Image (cartoon, rainbow, N blue to C red):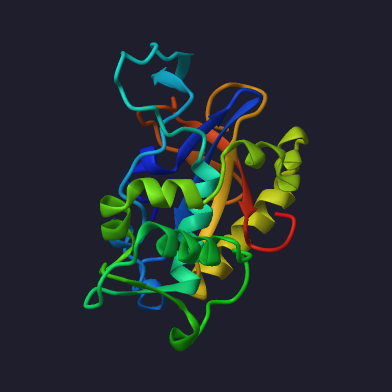
Length: 231
């Protein structure tokens, strides 16, 4: 299943468009993940505006209009995975002040996303909120400032895979890794690309992504990220 709120997870790079998606299996093993509960409540805007998958420059912000939060698709997907593995929430305790909350957010987001989930009694506790969505709605700016910058993700080592064409065996292996991750009830984060075109770059040995507000639809290449070191 691909969650419907692609605006929260979508971001675009000038050298090739990409979309980071959190996918999960609709099964008992993954049933503790809820998109409306376990993701942030604010949007990550694309750098360009899109109509039918064709990019154009965004209009200038009006005076007094808030600064857009952009180019954080990798950041938000990583944050989702980290909070799902390493954090828990206590809605019955009083919330922390901004400094203490920022420190706990960094405690979570500086952990390697591919590590195994922590036991409940070892997780970082966030008092005052029932889940990540509720905390992000109430403390949006604190969360944004402490989950990481967008520009370093342009230079992730694993991004260089998009420069090379891969044969059908690569995509078959990716499909197998996806199926295995979902069978274990784990999250799978994918990098979708049509590089070198400026459009977003499931089946057997090929992947297709449906038409939506920013992509014209069609075949894409998929690379797993955050599954292990250097991805």
